[in-house]
Length: 162
Image (cartoon, rainbow, N blue to C red; front, side, top):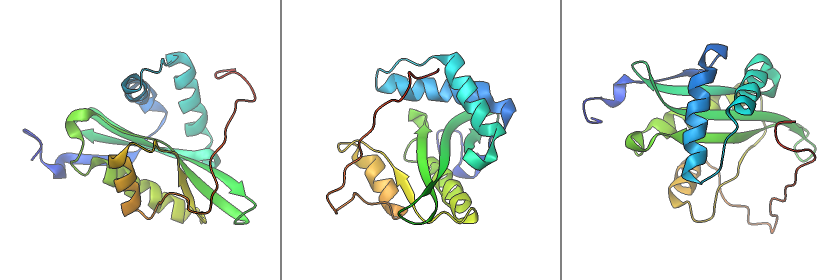
């Protein structure tokens, strides 16, 4: 039980354009935990673009009743390494009072199933080295730190939101 809510009352479903406001609220809470500002208009546009272009990926929402309590974002890209599509877990967030209650696992299960349905050859995620809870849950889905000496490098090619 989660207070007055049982795990069976948590529903995970694919998001659609009607869910953008709730997704932006969740993203804002996610960013706030790391003291990152969020431009809500930019975030809404980003979700609308992803949700209206299924070839780019998908988004899932976890709910208890009508309350959105978490989300997961899958981005898909072609990689030369696998000569196939690969998935990237762009976001995974669960509101604090519902953590460690299988919500993230259920969101990830939906994301992994969709990645397999799309014939993705691999799945990637970026996580802070000190985020042991995230590393543990991703590990349960077969995602492990790279051991081949590679590291992720990134840099903007344009300003965010432009």
